[in-house]
Length: 73
Image (cartoon, rainbow, N blue to C red; front, side, top):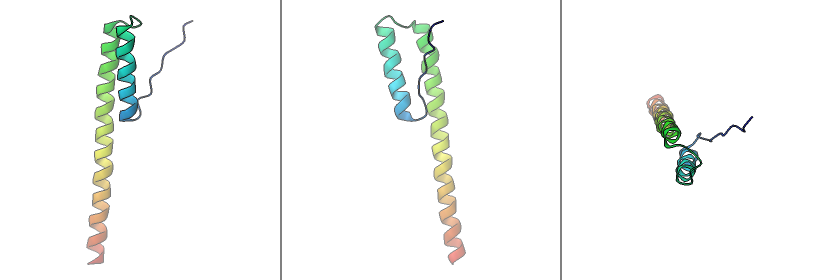
């Protein structure tokens, strides 16, 4: 059985590395462009999720700061 390939995609830097690897694999004939397109789509979805998570975290931090200021007034 062939080894399974895994790409780390937990951070934007991981996704960038994955996209670079996939591009090189296609250029070197190691991956079909159809498979690369599926991975690129997954990268885009992952980046969207990361972006939403980061926005939610920042919003939560801002809400906490506002609540602390209101309590001290």
